[in-house]
Image (cartoon, rainbow, N blue to C red; front, side, top):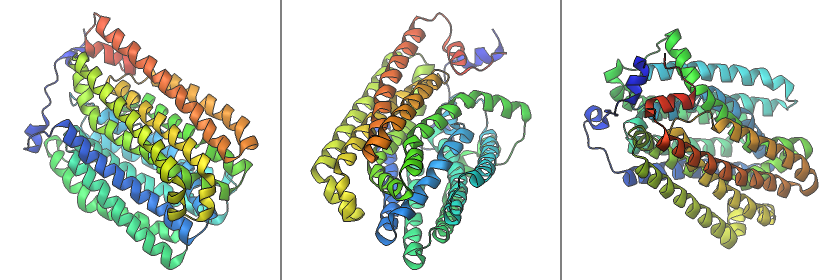
Length: 451
């Protein structure tokens, strides 16, 4: 057996408390911090849409939503979901400098790619500026994300939550003031970017320097072989993330082409509150990822499965709460946050709430697969979901308008939950019955080399 396989098969000895100098908090407290951070951040992003809808119009919201729809899949691909790989790197195969360097390269490629795409999108000048500025913000966000992965690895979820709340709160305040003064989206986005950069420089980097001190601090390290190996390990997850983001945005692309930018603005505004449920689920899955990874690596499959079921149960409760909330006060909420004409889309709001619940449940199942470092199995699932969403969007949106977009996402969500459940059952069965070590099993799962 090779040295790499032997290293992977040893029991995990990484202890966050030895580096941070503080006791590792129970997972439920970490959940609470992560929940608070992501709920607060999602609320701030929602308030940005509300400001644009109240003080501007649906076309401005549509331009911003389209900029996000263009940027998100590209950054999901080039980010390679390094945060998940980093937080599950229980044996510290790579240093923080390796992750930072690869993330910087990926972000630069993403910005260049998006700039190259813009001339082919047939957008207005203001819309092109919005796409480019959102891409710059995404590059900053990706750097903050890799620092959050370091915090997550050391189970400092409170610090990661504070970073989110600071960035979200100050950014939305700056955005609100700027948009109220100028009513100009590109100019306000510049202010938004500057505020986020300030928070990252003052808070995120300060925490990262302390945690990365044992690995030589924060610096770029261009070791070609190491970066190539890390990229090869992470690439399947990058494809999965990009495909998942692309899948979510397919109805938005279709709405912009088949209907109008104003319709896209209305759809994005109504979709965001219920999409926040998926954001929260994603944050909680991230907070549990390091713990799940160690349980699987130590072959504590019963505890691993128990934690996964707790997460899935939470996702189901989150789904139920979202649907009940929309049914009881959805119209009032849309009127209060946006304008009265948005409240006419009550049925759309309900369908999107159900879809968000399904996606939240599927999110936890996907994190369980990631914790087991089974990256390749997620790729065909994502492709199948994309085919479903594209087919349903082409069929439903021209006929049912915005309701058709929600139906397309609903069909994709049901398929995702079913496929991820089947995949996780198969992975656990294989792991329990396998005569190989867990190290060999996870290497086979993500396609790495044992040589």
